[in-house]
Image (cartoon, rainbow, N blue to C red; front, side, top):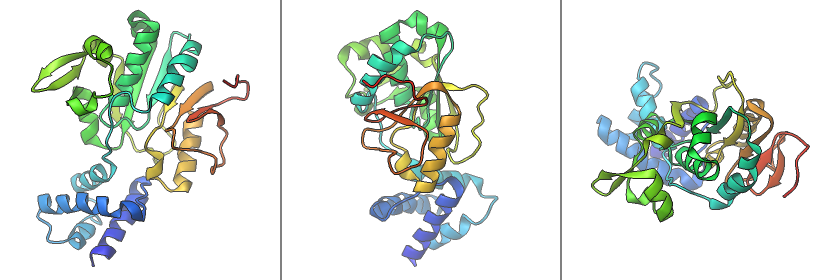
Length: 270
């Protein structure tokens, strides 16, 4: 019965938010759902699966989605892509209204990392006057964490000491908080990438969509990257994980480097 109930919940997650949990991650999902059962005093996974059919139990729905989407993240993750952003993309962003979207922001590590790199490269005055970064995630809990901007040592262990001194302040008990200048560059909102069309009135110069596409099956991956294309400026950029390729998808994006895509055809191949 546990396997049947687990498959029902996996199907519910796929229908509700497009999330795809492969067999190899089944044990991880089971552990997270078991903790929800204990918290909610459900006697079995079957009872939890049945409860998800009740459209009025929105708080429970959110808890299951949050548990399924929780992912480990940290500052300055995957430097290969970040270095390309710093060295190749940032010099092209010369308008007075540069918009960047972190499409799977989790606890905000990525959005704040982008803000720090931009500030370090182009200066805080440029960033304050020209840059806005939006971070979105389906998980309300991690968005609240991102807005608080307080992190433990494990999140900043890949951050250079000079960056740590410049952009973080002590929050006590071995914790660090992103400083106000960097926090002011970032805004966070909850958003389901499956929900279409995307609710943006202005296009983005750069979209980071890293460490999230593997949550979705191929059909939803296709929809997401094409929706991102439609809300990106002409000549804009999409950055994925170095381990993620879009080759198996039919897409208008042009691959210019590992984990880096551009919207138009008139690019220089670096």
